Image 1 (cartoon, one colour):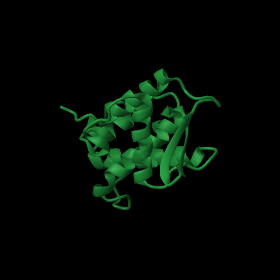
Image 2: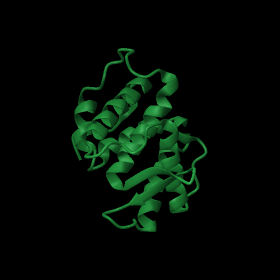
Image 3: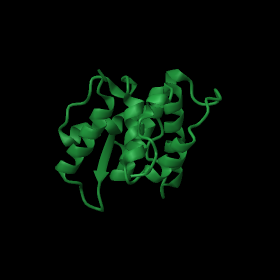
Image 4: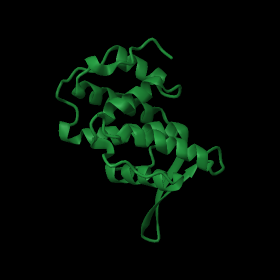
Length: 164
């Protein structure tokens, strides 16, 4: 783990969201293929499909739940697949220059960060078939095990649990 301070209490909520936005942009820009979703609605459908495929009940709060942005940022900072991208952003957090997304759209940044992180763990495709949106999950050219999907779904569920 890096030497980045993983206690984000000193960061404002806005700075947390701006850091997530920057990290997500870097992660998606570095991916070999474009992100397979093009809207917050499609991203939410991917998360719902993950819960369904894993047999895990979705959280009540969703990405707008209090603490979700901090939970996702903590995961990105600590996760071996995203820590190298997160460390420089957290070492010098983005300034709130009011050029980022409006606070009412913070949930979009959170769900985008979740999708970027999820993409580091499992390949997925989002497409329409017979007028219905479908999501397929793949891991190394074979379907991922239910246990692995359950682990990922539980992590994502924990992001969105209301914080006491």
